[in-house]
Image 1 (cartoon, rainbow, N blue to C red):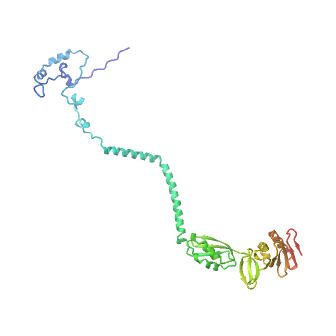
Image 2 (cartoon, rainbow, N blue to C red; image 1 turned 135 degrees about the horizontal axis):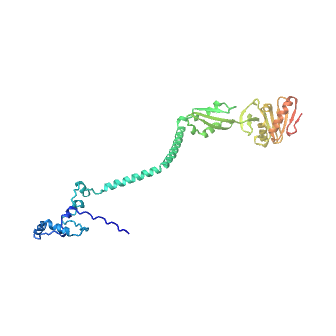
Image 3 (cartoon, rainbow, N blue to C red; image 1 turned 90 degrees about the horizontal axis):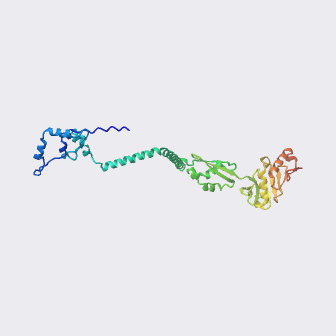
Length: 353
């Protein structure tokens, strides 16, 4: 194996070359004086250069004397300064003049780190924050819309200024509207239904009603009137009643176009309930021709038609719709003027005589 070539020895500096090997690192100091070289030092320094050359030549070739720093060198001297190389003043005093790290700088660095961390967090949670903002914005819009709607609805901007009556046939709409004048000026959502009911109870013919608010200022009252079935003779005169036996009006003489009801047991009997069911099932073409109706039991309801006094044996209130249809067809085929009896108690086998 070939032996590697040895590295060249480091070159001696000019200051080391000027000092003989035998006297390198030795400085005689006069003990009597405080500092500075003594007489012997000066004598040795003034030796002829021949001795130095001899000492130098005496050293074997290929060997390098160790470099020993001079005792007179200051502790802060750098190798470049010992070698005689000029160092700029700024570079030489850079380490000595450097400011120490202050507490304010530490705080500033910590703030910058926290700021960078927050920026990263915001960057990675941006989509989630945008989605949350959209939800919050939508919810806030809905709440604001509801609150504004309620505020406007309960304000005078939607107060009642007009009351319209719908469904009144027997009643005079002006009379009903006058009874409801107390609701004028009330916001539509705050209309007092109990007050409306108390006003309509004074009209017995009203069976039911409903209220409808039409913004901005209209209140619609829909009325369902009771259906009168006939007149019942009483001590006070002739009372118009409906199928439930509710007295609608009373007059001294019979009202025209209303049949006279004769029933045993009064308006609270089962016979009267059967009469009411039969009368409500009659079509208008037959209802207008009935002049009287009577019943002693729920199974023997009898009608009287027109001036010819033709009788209609109805029987019970069962199958009243079918009986009314069969009777209407029979009256068209054979008018009441030529017939004395229509027996529809069995609608599948009608008898006309």
